[in-house]
Length: 269
Image (cartoon, rainbow, N blue to C red; front, top):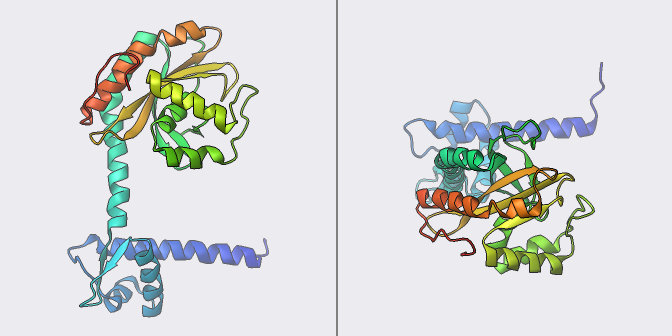
């Protein structure tokens, strides 16, 4: 039998609070747009003081709003923002599916669709190469911004202030080729903006090269990146750059489906 420590008890307490907060939010799944503390406590079978404490926390995060006249609570815009983010990612993945398959067929290399995921990028769709030797990638896999083609091409089109913040942080040396110097990385990002795509040469993983182009939404914000990746023994830098045209065409076609309007020529940004 395991003896529970104070740390274990604290952890269980935190998890319990998270669970209760989720229950509070789910209480609004019915027809009532606004619910008071007393009614929430009754429905959830917990003390009013606990409901009040949870509501204050959820208010601070914009997950709940309070009607100042009645004191009742309703779901907040913070949840709407998260829901919109999930929906946008689902829309992006759906709209990109056929175009990613076409790009895989043209290049015969693994094609990936990545999106921003906090301090990293996350791959939300993968079309594997049909070659016997190919890059192994899974949906949900995360990778750094600074050492990947997909990450750098998204990073390049962020506002300068955000770029500075992200590259001033400690940048891990993934391989001997990884660029970790902020000034050199800034120059690389400038070149990416000029070309409209990014190239990765064994900087995140030895034995792999990749090329990526940005995906824009209707507001011209970069919401993702399309990448083509393969092993170095098959993908010379010349071969990799030869994928730029079909890659850019695919990325901009996906962008057009999301409402963006832009040209399709290589080198435009």
